[in-house]
Image (tube, rainbow, N blue to C red; front, side, top):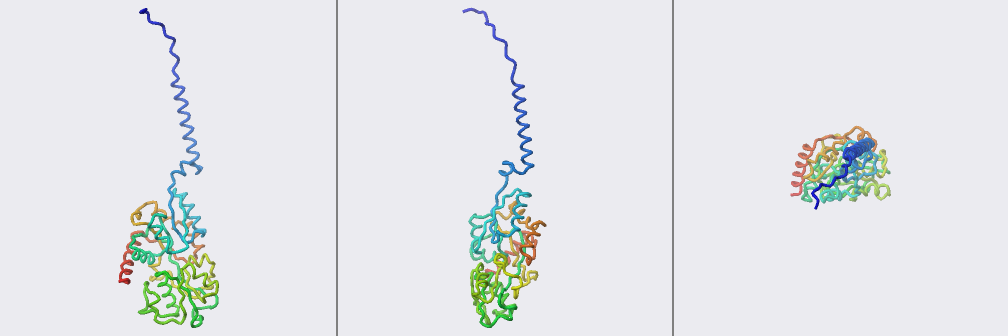
Length: 312
């Protein structure tokens, strides 16, 4: 074998600078495209970074929710999906079982009663408003004008029924034992000049409109969805009175999620001026209350104690 070292061809010029330049250009283009898409609000990255939060409500069709969900997306990067319930008995179990993340349909008194009855620990994280509870009639101009023995519908769930009984007592239509409490029921009616018809809260407006009752206690959201006329209100409690405090409506979540900052931000978003303006058009009778989560939770605990005492 020859010991002569064969001559090698000339080494080609390095392609590294060219490849590096191409890679750098691709990176720059990607960054520019990403910035443009982000500014346009339509990038896949933006969509992927959004957090989806399901909120259980009973009035999804009202326009103020559109304002709310749009702001949640724009300001918080949260895709709010509303889940509508037509039966008050469903949103709390749905929340407890993880079918929704938050619900917004109930007041403190109702939540306390649910927690005690169900052995649950759902917690308020923000307040919305207090609504008057009204007695409607399409045949009488006042509560006094209702004839003796007239049928009057009221909700059959414990807390709304108790509040309805207090409204009817204030209207002079019945008397409750010892003046009544937020936990009164039909057994506490000592004297009544009208016949009480206990129905699901979602059905009292229908009973009135069909003519099957002369008057009805109708919760505000159902009155709104049924387009009941304000002039048909013959009596209502005062949402601005101190006695109305337990009836402030709430954003509610599971106890383990009560400190979730996104959920707290969503509760606070209700008080954005744009949302409140839209809300006031949908619920002109609502009195907005802005109460911090810690205070709401303290109030809930106190009412739960009262509920346990009433049961025991």
